Length: 351
Ligand code: ADP
Ligand code: MG
Image (cartoon, rainbow, N blue to C red):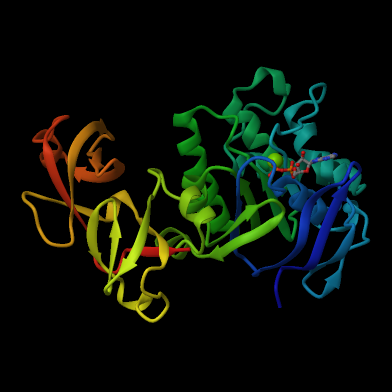
């Protein structure tokens, strides 16, 4: 039994926007599940619909074996962190954290005891009598997490909780969040538009586009084997090389280069067929000289990534990006000839 199951979940907003389009989703008990996709693809809508803050137009939502589709949000046993945290500015940190327990009408002593415990757990001791305006962004975020956790919900929903933090704090908060989830083991759905965040945090990722799931899998699966061009171009810190190509005599010609046909694609393509040849910059190996089955081109740009470099080669008028190690990068300058070979087993073909 899954922690959350949606079937045919559809959400139409007034004005004819279909924000969720017949979504089928299963989130396992204890899982850290990421919803990843560009702005406007329906991530927030999905989270709010699961929380009960939006009503489903059609379809069903189950939590465990309970149908919660029409259940009011207060009864859903969900803790949510909003993108802007939505803290109450006039309340102290302690009262903010204790708020969900007040809604549940727990006695004051219980409220304060539990709020202090969770505040301690999140490193917020000493800040309890402040107001949100007197806290840093990172502290506000922890208060929002504490408030979502205080009632020990079955399900933790996080809407881009790291996006308001600056780059450095964001990395720290990411690690903190991962540790927190590991310790608590609470089923978590985490929304982000940042593929690196999803890859780093999640047990599984659903990649969304226009209210639909385009791929669902582990970070490794989604990174190594993007199921379609949308996912291929969305995942990866450096964009995947996607080159127009054609099948010719058991090989592929792309960027003027004859390349081996991936073994698993052999029976799936036909002579003369147009395909898109996909290979990640990380999966191209720089070579010291020309070799069969390798790209040959002129270096146009070398970008330092810190520890490695991203080299863009002009190969028959197509840019081919290659990640190369520090030492090799130092030997390359714009205008140089350079060679790069796709690693066997790491090439993907798309139609
Ligand atoms: P995301 O969180 O992935 O950026 P949203 O769920 O916020 O996406 O939005 C999905 C789509 O629904 C967008 O086209 C957005 O403009 C639309 N939308 C979101 N909220 C509303 C609303 N309250 N009324 C009308 N349209 C909305
Ligand atoms: Mg959103």
